[in-house]
Amino acid sequence: MVLDELKKIISEKLGVDEADLTADTNLTDDIHADSLDKVEFIMQVEEVYGITIDDEAAINFRTIGDVADYIEAHK
Amino acid sequence: MILFAYDGEIAREELLSVIDEKLKERGEKPIGTIRYDERGAPVCEGHFVSITHTGAKIVIAVSATPVGIDLEKSDRASRVSDIQSWTAYEARRKLTREGIRLSDVREGLPREEARYFDIFPGYTLAVAGGERDCETVLLPKR
Image (tube, rainbow over all chains, first blue to last red):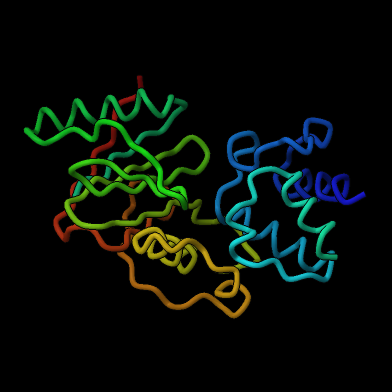
């Protein structure tokens, strides 16, 4: 499941407990990802799923669920 | 331009209140309420502001001209770019309020001009735009 894979990526990247992550986890407010964290995360997601995420979509990613929804719609 | 720096956990509203006190002491207009535009950039009446934080360290630039700033840990390893180039790029994108472009990251970041300030040892602070005269104010812990 995409959401579970994203939680694993974020957990490994930011050192956050995977069990604390949900679809509603806000990347900025809840796990304090900065811009560089988010860009690195998106680059990794693109590699894992073989997709290219457009800028407008990336700007509007607020939660892990937002990213999962985008991947589900574009993979 | 003034770069207000604070190291520690503090509510954003409290920090802005401290900065307003400092501005009033200098006879300058306080920042007052900050709102955020559609891209999340801070906007206030009477000043241009830019905000950056990493961990518990935060810097707020207050300027009479448009400004963008970015702070990162200097030894941070990134697959995207070296930290000097990244902070200069993000500071410039904040200055122009254009936001980060993934295509720039994929193709290699454009070389951007920025000034660098050593406010926190071990951290890189890049400043794009803003007034040439610049003062840094390290705010005491509360």
